[in-house]
Length: 398
Image (cartoon, rainbow, N blue to C red; front, top):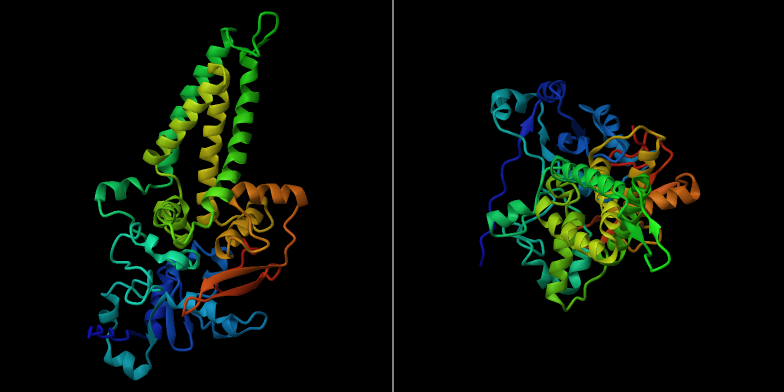
């Protein structure tokens, strides 16, 4: 019989320690005597940072219980991952000097998952485990957690599967600049012709380049929508280990851990394989400079997409702006099950829906989080309420 590990002792903090940490920039809140450090969650908060920072050092029990909004068990479960200890009374505070807790680093992250009870072993790479989940995979992958993911045993492959956001610009913007100049000068020679026959052809000159560039951006955006909807959000057969593994590698990992900033943009090495494929395809279908101009615009569209994706996860757009509404859509995309009636696919799905309606009109959105026992529930948020719920309000962007 396996011996259960001993529970770590509960840490206790005095009110003076809480005030001191908040004065130092931490965002600690109380729910009764339970203390939570929301510092790692502040910049991730869909409603903006200010909503949480205003409550630093205070008891949020009233905000959790409502009115105007009573938080569900799912919201409280999400809050528990940031639990760091208890508020001690005067006697406890005197018996436990401030130096004891001050010297110990608080680590509120990654406590949502019970590694002994979860369907996968988080102490091992996940990529080779998820395929064995079978029919449980779809539900498991859409129960988001706030912890880093390791995919591979090999440190080399693992490093190639992650990247910092700025590496997309560092690697691909010089390529776009080089290709743009190359296409412009090639078109300027006047040798590029479209629909060329013995009696008719269209000469493509350099002044066509901006239009072809924009066409490429549009083609990329439509392609991204199709890939996101029909490939990234397919439901792999429960009996197919390899398709489940492929789905998790391509996109499932991002939905399982949407706050893992090292996996928010496409790493340059695997991206180069996909980009190389489209380069060869475009060159085979169109005259060289003509097709390359479209390809260059598409590559730039990809850069804009990846940077926008990162910003929607970590940025705090001003309330009422286009980016605020776009972030509201993207939050819903991540935290409501992808097949719900109002779900959106990819950044283009958000963009086109808003262009069609002119504004974001939904008064509520639902945040789907995991409940104990593997069920899913919905945390409803009032879109128009600026006070908003403590743990997230996609419509309240500051």
